[in-house]
Amino acid sequence: MTTPVDKFSGAMRQLPLVAILRGLTPAEAPAVGDAIVEAGFLLLEVPLNSPQPLDSIALMRQRFPDALVGAGTVLSAQQVREVHAAGGELIVAPNFNAEVIAEAARLGLVSLPGVMTPTEAFGALAAGATGLKLFPAELASPAVVKALLAVLPKGTPLMPVGGITPDNMDEWRAAGSAGFGIGSALYKPGKTADDVREDALRFVSAFAGTLRA
Image (tube, rainbow, N blue to C red; front, side, top):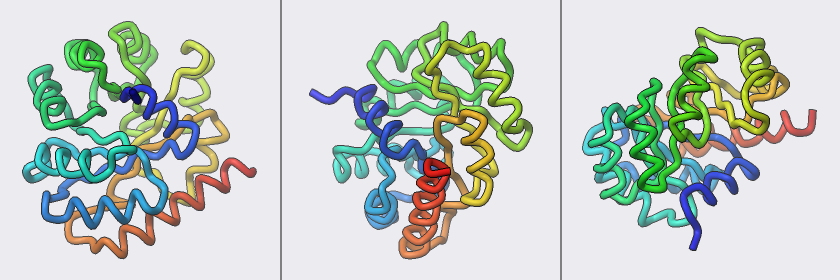
């Protein structure tokens, strides 16, 4: 049996990019999901402030059994339970909330809370976080990644989110970023599946380039 953590570990080795699909509707989910998964993405996040997010998560969980599908903007333990009930296996938050992380861990889900400081980062790991989302990355820099990784437990996945583009991934990767969350540069409401596919391929190609550098 492949657990959510197994899927996360595999994705982190293969393509550690989280597709943040804020505003996605259930009607769009199959086509947009196809575009992203066919490009190589294995980590799919539907923020809970999207229209009928649990329906989109359920649809994509069924359509892409090998991908790790879940929710973003998860702010309470109750929401963790609702995502789990819909089949979601990934819990992403903009903040550090120990109750959200603990509930995700209790249910065997992958948890990526948002942190900015060493205090938040260590607190999140102590609560059971699988990895850490550096958010908003616009407030940080590659130097912040380097500084955090110098004190965090070796191997801690630290993933900047916010303002990440194919053109700036290189410097973040050089500082030690394990992966990235990709939002409006990949998908925003009204964007066609074909356009999403094109941008997804650009991100995949750019990330592969950082590995060769």
